[in-house]
Image (cartoon, rainbow, N blue to C red; front, side, top):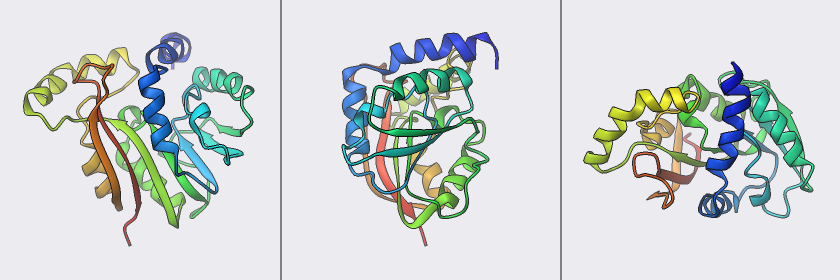
Amino acid sequence: MGLYTNVLFPMGYDLMMSSETKGEARARQLSQVSGDILEIGFGTGLNLPHYPQHVQKITTVDPNPGMNSKAEKRARQYQIKVDIHPFKGEQLPFADNSFDSVVTSYTLCSVENIRQTLTELRRVLRPSGHYYFLEHGLSHEHHIQKWQYRLNSIQKIVSAGCQLNLDIKMLIREAGFQIIQLNEFYMSDDPKTHGYMYQGIAKCDV
């Protein structure tokens, strides 16, 4: 990771991802989380103000030291204890069945191995637990999909590996999750190529 990824991108991330509209979507995503909570791809901690009041502690994972530095500063503003781990989602340092709730927000688009990451999420989630996701990905409209594929290589360069053309719903199901709640929509303050959203809840498919 270089200067752009560690320093400049975290600064830009806060500006791009902290709109009121995105905050409302984060609040809807997190409204039902409970128990022992793990958030993968914690970033700069933009989810913190949107966790329910009963949440007192979360465990987080993000490999980017620049993101974690900003997250630590943001965490001091809230009454939530944040246990930050500088690891990748593909190799989580937690035992099987460790968490009641697992959270990803704008995360899956930029992990190196999305299938392995989702497999790890399922491994650390308790059988009775739930996976809460808010991810952008492949649109249901074919003409938007064409542009997502065209722009994807540029997006990966300027946004630290972020991809536009992931079928989030399919990938979650392939990882062994059953999606029990799903809302697909366009984020109103993003271009349609970048703002087709999958927000929902999944559980382990046994």
